Amino acid sequence: MFTPSEIELFNQKKYENEYSLEQLSINPNLDRNNYFHKLVQIKLGLIQKYGLGKNVLDVGCGAGDYLLQSKNVVSSAVGIDYTQKAITEALRRRNQHEAMHLDFRVENARQMSFSEATFDLAYAFSSLYYMPKVQEVVAQMVRVLRPKGVAIFEMGNTYSLNTIVCNAYPELPQSCHISTGRMAEMIRKASLRVLSWRAFQILPMWGEKPAWLRIFLGSRCKKILERNSGSIMLDEKICSVPVMRAFAFRHIIICQKV
Image 1: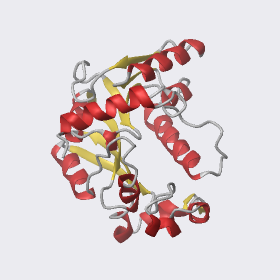
Image 2 (image 1 turned 90 degrees about the vertical axis):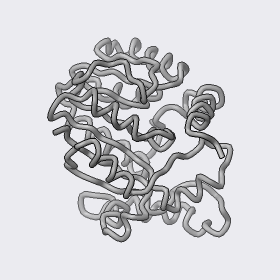
Image 3 (image 1 turned 120 degrees about the vertical axis):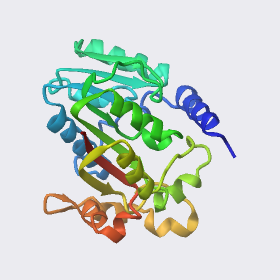
Image 4 (image 1 turned 60 degrees about the vertical axis):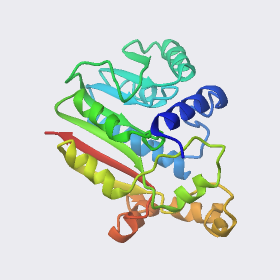
């Protein structure tokens, strides 16, 4: 059994040494009706809604895709990641796009160097479920937020089919999924007010193992769940049912600092 510090170091080395720049970036070639493309658009929409004209922090920014695609939305922004390779690429892209109001730095999300009350919006997309001490990251994000600032946390639910699939691939970074109850407890302890809690990914949507789950891993299920039901995907509509939300993997929690 790994300690939290060992998991953090293992995941950092995995991303730094084994993942390509393409794997650290959003895939720009996905069809606009693709499930994961729609998730990206939802997150970009949240940045536009809460980060318009604001000072923004991206925690676990990878190669900087979300900030670079929001460069005309935010007033200024900083993206942090614990891999030098990702930050080097993010800075290269920043310079290429002449988006000098964006900055990218190597930082440990549990020990940020920023002063208190620095940002209006702080978000972490697709990164918290690889961080073993996520409560410390949440505390840091809240610390650097201004009063009435908004924090957006994307967390992974340990009681989900996706967790079972992740565990079937030991070559991947070590998962740090938590229960929805623990998510709620962390939000409460941070004295945050929940503005919206959205859930996604009732099925894994990827992978080929374990074999007994294969019926739920095929593209047919994905194509059904990525269809729109009204203004949202069918997947999100299913996950909004309380009994189903407890087993959905991906939770995007929008909070305000009191």
